Image (cartoon, rainbow, N blue to C red; front, side):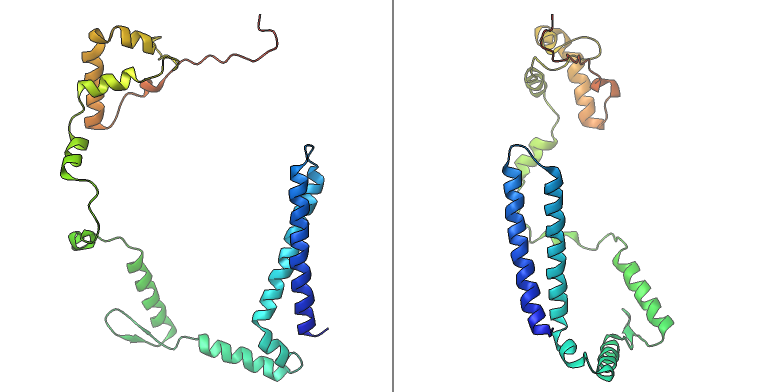
Length: 220
């Protein structure tokens, strides 16, 4: 079979086969009772058809030398040698403009280049880099973001917690916090302000009590 016939047959068959198999796969997923053995088989067949089409395009990309050189060994070797010659580096130039021609010296240039490329630097003038960006956060917005959190904001956050939330390790729930807020406000606000200043809080703050209730037909 010549390459032209193989291309027409393989490409069309693989593509049509993938379309048909995908249709079957979608139909199988649409059924109420999934047949996983059939689904896995269809997926395997789709992957195989995809590989056939991929092979076709890989062969097509080398169509020229396959057609001309299949029956000509000398042409094939000449083609490979020419490709290697064109892909070979004869010299490299470093950042200082010096040329390296030997294997060792070119290797050193490559090492230095990638070391510089992947080494972070402090930068020289960040203002020039940022000059092209449009300012989104105004001075007023920035002041509001960095100012100290107020007692009102803390109270709003506490009273915004759902009453159904799990209680803390000390057994005090959200309803307790709301009812006795006037008494506990100073202590809680002090701790929360400290968190915004230092960025850390006691680990036990996240400890809660959660009761898991199994779902049964007759819980009584």
